[in-house]
Image 1 (cartoon, rainbow, N blue to C red):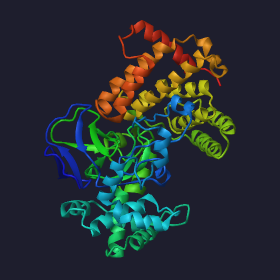
Image 2: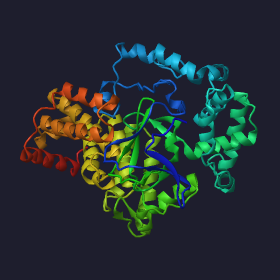
Image 3: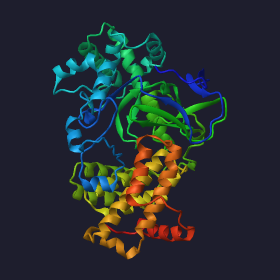
Length: 494
């Protein structure tokens, strides 16, 4: 795998195997590690037709309202018409000649005929990731150091074999590994033994990262030296991608000789959920400080409440029903689900996850006032508790979405669109809101992503387009407008 910089050192830890440590102090919001490309990376099957398999440029479909509302997508200007570009945007072809040539040289030449012979069948991303490793190993396009570093990663074979819980197909995880290994071995034509391929796949399941866009939209899987990072429910680092470039950045000030940690799971869930997921996926029980004190994001986990548990189950059932309904029908189910939990703190799961999905459903319905209310509820009452750091990447992406939604609503209001007339009663000066939100996003991006790359460029360009980024606004002016936003968050507008 790519080499680590001299100040980042692998060391043994008392209870978590090998970890990564920094030999010098690191300030918050700084780049710790910069990797031009992961060792291997593949796109999810759902993105094989709308993302480049080399630079990971993503051009999802959608109409003008979708992009203006702001699902967080980053635009990339290429000098070509976007429609033309989308027609040639394929995992195999890449988004331009340079990407096709680069991907071919790196390893796609070994797999192209295999995947072509299988078309229209598409192998799961984990199988394709294993095959890419096997083919590159077989064709000697992996160095011995890279292969040796990979083999030194944990595989947890014994744990996989012992884990007996079954999936929806009635298979244990180990049975699934056996099937996927057999497929990877058959299609790749590798000379590795089946046992070796099973171990390779197990290593990938334990150590692979989710490949994302700069705005944290999942794109696929990848393997990089950051696989050595151990877990913490209060991590001091986070990963962001800029195309194929992986950057490890600090979430806090990190003293010298401190272990660097990353969160493997969603830390907004209580200890029981976090520990269960970590045990089933990674085979360890977390003993970090917040788990030892039964807390979540510095908030004590609420005591067991069977009534709340029952309401939560019902709310989640309604959410599942909404997912298979039309957006209009789903809106009613989401409203009922959220109403069931309204008497409990809004930061307690599953309310936040249901609220987020209700927001996405409102966007699909073009119910802009309702979408704004849902988003502002999270902005004021949930995100500051889940992510106390104002520039935490997840919180920042939600601010980015809020900004784009505000700009969309302001545009529609200016056009006299009936869909947003209900918001007129709040008397909001949308320009002030957009100015302040843009400033929050721009300032936060310096810390979460750095002043370079696609996301930073998009934020600056967006500011130019909407005419913000000038002198700061007075505190009293901002607070007055923010008070109006809070009224929307607490209202019952539809």
